Length: 192
Image (cartoon, rainbow, N blue to C red; front, top):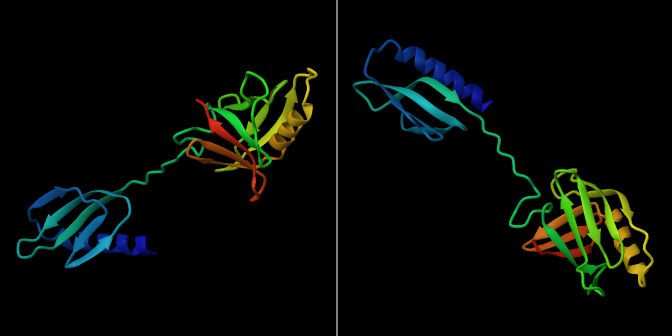
């Protein structure tokens, strides 16, 4: 409604100002149009042609062009990106994690292929992931190599946790996997 009012006002003022063949100047305005001691805010105003009437300080519009800029931000980007960052597992289901091997437990997501790779003590784990919306994350087709190792229960819990995850949050250098709005299922620290 506001845009229609502004357009009608501009057209009216333009028609009336065409009768005065006075000095024309081009000015760049940033989101304001001055009209007889009143200021109207107009979104996305880029360039305005104005005509000055010799006996007053009133600026009338001859032409107004608008430009809409859509700015998108990748929700996975920040100081540490969800994808393309190696995330070291530090907590699983509320319990601190310490590696029992010489290799860190981790997850690494590749945004180009939509696949992830992980390790939780014995087998290599892989699968696909999708970011459905900002902060939303789902894993599928989770597979693992089939080596038999001690403490396979931890690795099974890790895989189940990944499969349950439906959203994530990055705070500083920490990544949290969540199910709904509950407590964190897993916490990771950026290794990058």
